[in-house]
Image (spheres, rainbow, N blue to C red):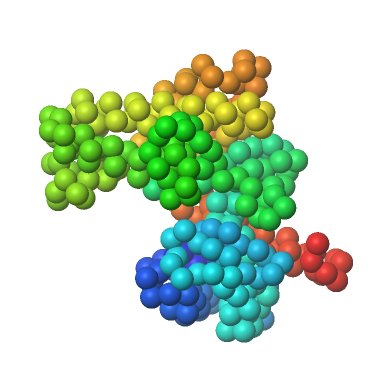
Length: 315
Ligand SMILES: [Zn+2]
């Protein structure tokens, strides 16, 4: 988990990165979160009086109004967990909850690659694929906070089974996990490749190993990245047709592969989207890196605090 103190101008004053004890259950994760928050507050030299609010970007289905994390894909044992109340009682400040990909989109909207956009789509391509929709200058959360689950858009209904119950979700075809699974399958089938030089063994081959082998010119690694780029482009084409965004901002670890992945993906999107929305959309790499989520969560908390101060209640 990453905790940070963010100033009112979006400047990141201090940060604390610590391991999330996900397997130990919600109470252990919350204890670690509180400890991490205190560490970053101490490092920033911020007093209790100076801290206005706390924003938490959490993976999964979160509900800020109820203060709950309903479920989280990477946090076993979390079911309707009262995260807001737990952190408020420990740190004595108002806490606001937002989905982590939505937080990253808000961060990019205010201080990153989405600055100045009224309509943009943020796509994070890492182990999975997540997203955030900024429509009319605001994050679109949907009626239950679940909007923007771009990674579960079905691309191939005969494709690999996803944990969500569907086949061929976008993240099963174009994410880091998809790249690694396909690489391991082909290696097991005996395809000649140098990918194994970049991993301890076949089981531990990950997207990074494929990326390194591709950079060294390995044919199998290059074809795996072309395949991921193709599917990435199919999904981007859908997004362009559905949302007609001004900009698509792409972040996440896999996007660090850069042009080798992204340029063919953009070209594939162009073959699939309608001409006019494709001609007007701009593609941009996320500008805030790993900090987009903490900055966005802070912006979200700031906005909610302002609303309370102005209206006496949360809208
Ligand atoms: Zn899915």
